[in-house]
Length: 402
Image 1 (tube, rainbow, N blue to C red):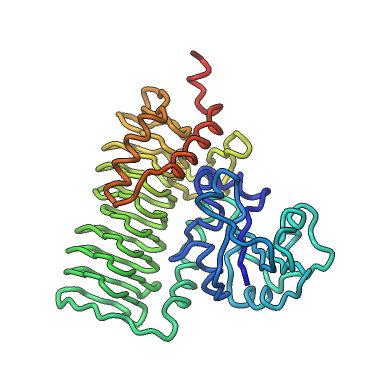
Image 2 (cartoon, rainbow, N blue to C red):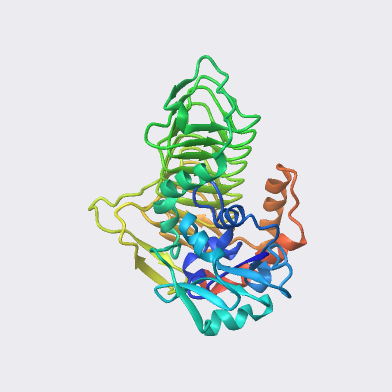
């Protein structure tokens, strides 16, 4: 049966800037994206997204003419929830505290009406449901989701051996190594949680890896990196320095010294050498962050919150990010001092002030960056960025002053 993951209109705006460039279900939390969690658990042969029109070309809906399981893309599944979804009959919807979790539709073309009006036949979820409604919930949930994904991915399988006499391993039963992984003279400590090393990942000399940890396919843990736990290093990322309780979605680099904590970094980002994030205020007060949905700073209720960065943003060497900084899509940050705590999409500058990073100049950088990974900054990507640029014009207040 076709699996269709939809963006809940009451949730998606609160997950910006991460959802400017992807559906909610394409967010990574744990080892897998939310979409991958559902597809694996439901063994679905076909997967589609119901998202914003400008994202639909990159993330197609697939066949919406026939029967489908329609699932809220912000919901992280577990075994009990999946069983309840599988037990739904045509026309039934599963809800949690008034939020639509999933529905079985005989005709998926009716999904728009379903989201707006709901179903008459409603079933309440048997347990509290994990719904990602704010960006910081991704890193708060990350350790739990690594454990769940680890169990899902490794059940009935045998890990590859460490294969390096100079690597020290603690709790080897909690470590799973996929094919093609290279490890040299590292420390892997899985006593506090599992460590998953994805296909063709690399762990260099002197690296310290503490679980729960996911080093996904093609990712590189550079020499002497310290990964402190509850970290996801997404596919083809390269990391160095010190990282704690953070997620790098994919294709992003933090290759050098510097601290990243309680943070979520999108794709195609780069943090220059000695870039540091503050994740704790000096007075230990709850951290406030900018909300694109409400256009104001909102209280996270969290003592620890670092950097939330959208796709294709870059930070020059020695950049210092204050506690709870939000950076939009396509920003380029550099210079001395602390930049503001909200940096709009397509900003160019730093503490001394910003100007607009125009699309032609942005495209030059994106072409180079993606080309290094043998990927094209094609018409689809260009269309998405043009739409994000348009949607975020009001945030670039310096343009209004001209």
